[in-house]
Structures are given as structure tokens and as C-alpha cells.
Amino acid sequence: MRVLNSQHISPFGGLNFVLEEFEKQNIGSLLQDYLPILPNQSKYSWKDILYSFWSIYFCGGDCIEDLGGNFRDHLQGNRFLNVPSLDRVLDRLKELSLPKEILKSPRGKSLHEFGINEDINNLNLRILNSLQMFFDKELTLNYDNTIIFNNIADSLNTYKKEFGYCPGVGIIENNIVYIENRNGNSNPRTLQDATVSRMFDLLDQNNVKVKAFRADSGSYLYNIIKIVSKKAEQFYIKAPHAAARVIAPASFQN
Image 1 (cartoon, helix red, strand yellow):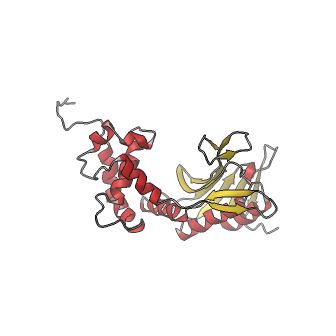
Image 2 (cartoon, rainbow, N blue to C red):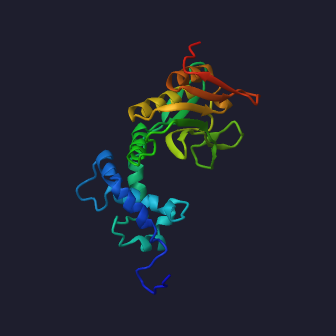
Image 3 (spheres, rainbow, N blue to C red):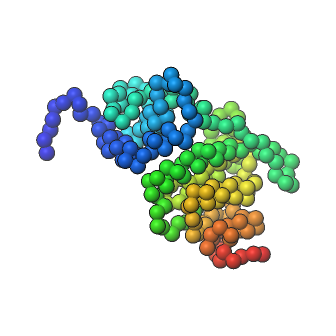
């Protein structure tokens, strides 16, 4: 091992291996082709915006504010991207957001606030397919709703008696394949069948075939069983107040 004294050595050098692999897999081109067209005078492309954002977490950061200060200084001059300011990244990401949808369950009186962004979910699946994350594998789709406690002004009280959000998330192996936010007053069972249907439809559109579906007792619902029995060969759903799990073939029709 040689120890070099050079101003070109930085603690972020390993990031280049990740960004180089992204380029080999044409992730930058996919971002440019799929995301909205930016004005001609834009100094930074979508590749610059998202590569910079992702680099925060690849380099040990834990929030978007880490893009400022010394972190940005170290990334300047990287051959794979031009590093925008923190404000520019935040502004561009806000442009990808959509208004929340106000929904009502068939039998309830409460209003439910959902954050549904199928375009971003679709882009995520296209990237995962480009990286061949699902190639020639028997896939198990895990679904769960997770409470994210917070003090954000628009968050509502959850069934845990604290304020937060309760997003529904689909995961295959270690990859998030679908996410749909919901406010805290919407418990995991609320309109879950619509969420799961949208998730499976998007997976079908991207040719991601699921062999098994797995979920906890929050998904122990007739409509959920009816949906997943048509989409997967097997499903595993924990029955409430029981250690046993329900296992059924895809031929379930009742």
C-alpha cells in the first residue's frame, strides 16, 4: 500500500464507483428521458439533481441539508455531475410533487388524505429493472404500513395516539417497489385494497411478476385476499391474534 499526499484524494472518492455504474446502466439517460423537460436555461439537469441528492446517503449523510457546506465542496469537480445548491435541489424535487388526494372510505365518514404519485413509483421500477434487480428470480412482495411520527403541521393523530403519517410500502428483497403516503388518521386497513390494487397494476406494467405476497394482520381483509389470490401463486397473511399464518393458493375464489 502506498500512502499518497495529494490534494486530489478525498473521503468521497469511492462515490465515483457508484456513479460510474449508474452511467453504465444508463440511469442518467433514463432520468433525462422520463422526468419533465427542464427549461433550456437550466444549468443543472435531472441527472445532476438526483445524483447529487443520492450522493448524500451514499457518503454517510442522513438529511438533504448535508448537501451544503464541506460536502458540496468535496463533490465539486466530480466528472459525473455538476453539483447544484441545496435550494436548487429542493426546488426541483418540489416540482415532482403532486397535491394530496382527499378520499372517503365506503362506510366511514372521515376524510382521508393520500399522497399518490404513480409517475415516481413507475420511474423507481424502471430504474430497478434497468439494474436487473428482478431478473430471473422468484419474487416475494412484502407489504406493510409504517407509522412515521412527526410534528409537521399537516400531520394528524394516529391510532398510536401520536401525530404522524402512515404510508403503505411494497418491498421486494431490499428494494422499495411502491410507496403511497397517507395521513396519520388513516389506519393500515383504510382503503388498503385500493392501494394494493394500484401497486400490483404498476408491477404488472413493468413486467415484475410476483410469486408470493406477504403481509401482517393489518392486511387480513377479504378484499386483500381476493386481490392477491389473483396476482400471486401464494400469499402469507398473519391472522389477527394468532401465531399461525394463512396460506392459500391462487385459485382462491370465495
